Amino acid sequence: MAESSFVQPAILEFDGYYDHWAMLMENFLRSKEYWHLVEAKIPEATRATDLTEVQKKAFEDQKLKDLKVKNYLFQAIDKSISETILKKDTAKDIWDSMKQNHQGTAKVKRAHLQALRKEFEILQMRAGESVNEYFARTLTIANKMRIHGEATPDVTIIEKILRSMTPQFNYVVCSIEESNDVDTLSIDQLHSTLLVHEQSYD
Image (cartoon, rainbow, N blue to C red; front, side, top):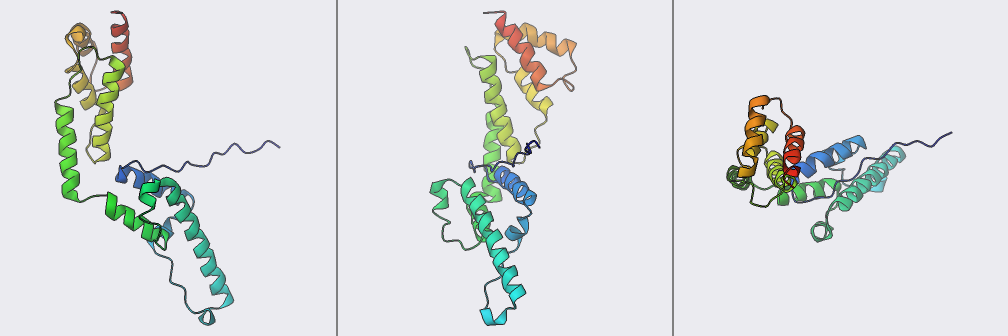
């Protein structure tokens, strides 16, 4: 019989963007049926004489599962960060510490988003910059805005790119705007059209 080709979901390494990481990490832990251990802390151990054998087994089972969740979290967190949470007793303690230290206050998040909006607003293709480079730069900023809660539809990105290209693209930009409905044009379609135009100049 052929071996199963099922691939385990990957553990996402924390890259500084807490909200995005937390969303994917929560999905990962839910897929393992361990999320309840983050939502509710495992109970403190009581005296062995107060527990029945069934209760002892259930408690040990919870402790083992909590240890697995802690292991997943440590795999996702850089050493420089993990050193600050090594003494946290449970998975919930680690999760709460990460949230407190990295989610940031609403005021800080608003300020960061405002800075990204400004960066997006003044974005212009540089002289000598390739289409690939400019798309990468634009999409990086747009994706950061999305991660910080900004609704940035594809049409906003497309319109931004069309009005911020260097003069050598003026003709093709006018052609795209006249022959396409920008609302239905995809970013990939725009990218490929501009690449063809760029290559015609090489």
